[in-house]
Length: 467
Ligand code: SAH
Image (cartoon, rainbow, N blue to C red):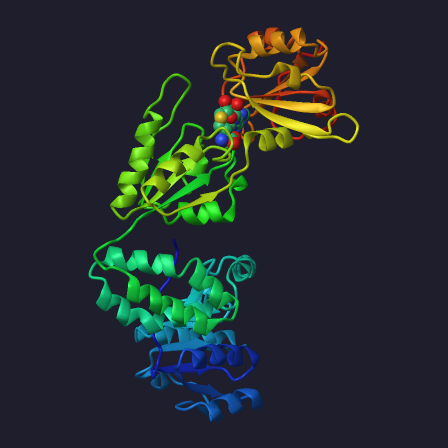
């Protein structure tokens, strides 16, 4: 980090601005917005700048020559002239007197630089490239601008209005933070963004009146972490990941996704490889309940979507039974992710009018799957957890009448940098997998749509033999 970002309180402080043109005007406007008194020194001052100085209390313009005496009792100085020698002199004098100095467009002469600013006062965001690429800083600002609704400022005003009341009500920083995080998200924030400031205020007052300062109820977020590529997370997943106190995560959650959780959140691994349950399901349910009861914001982070072969429902039932508030955030499920990243559309007008998501985990070999249904033509069948039962699955499908030459794909570690795809048919995929040995987690797709892979593959490695 070349520069330390600081926020400078300039209210009723005095600044010297050397230069009276357009660039000086821009800087003057900024300083005035920050409540600063400015003295402008220049041989010429534009009308616009003069007007600004005239109408702002404590500001003045002097027509004349710069001299170091003007730096006395100044909180900062800005040189905005087109005279390089003068700019350099101002910089030297200021450094000599320990007055912070900025010379426009000359980072080497500055002791501080102006960031690009997103102003949603009281929230202000400064972005700097340390003078190395102002364009990149401005582009970053443009992106950040789009993230915050304009009415974000109003939310800040609201928070400021209730700050003292909240402080009086809650004794610990943890309780206050908890209150604010809940209030500034969800219903209060939505009302503010919709322009219903009064409603929002009423709600916040009501919440304060009814909040029990001793009872600090926690909450559980059941969040789908998607298939591995962190860019496939939803905004909501990311937001909740960044506000959780403790995270219980599964084996399928990728390291890159986990890295996006709040830095000081406690991370607890609970999940389960096949036949090796780090923590049994009942134990996980209990952990969620116990930690929420301690007042924590508990994140239950699962691979893919929590409601698709994720046992998310069972965990919620337990929370419900214990009266613990929760939210559920869908994630991109493996079928959707793997098929797109392998260039295999799950449906196609010509060959697949429907798609089935099926578990390949067989309790008593085959008894729990209806294979007669799975062999219907014009559908795609996606097997989750089907890698280790592949021999049984393919054999049963053929025995129930599915043509042996039906195409099959195995997608291993879908969306991850080491994604691999293996293509075959019901007749040969087991043998091919015996050679290729693609690792788990792997998804199996059965149906004519698999043929499209050859044309549409765009990501990862293909391990299919050429013959
Ligand atoms: N809730 C998850 C599925 C959990 S079941 C979801 O919605 O995706 C676990 C199975 O999902 C694995 O056995 C595998 O078949 C599949 N799976 C999950 N992530 C995968 C990935 N990145 N690549 C391939 N298969 C995956």
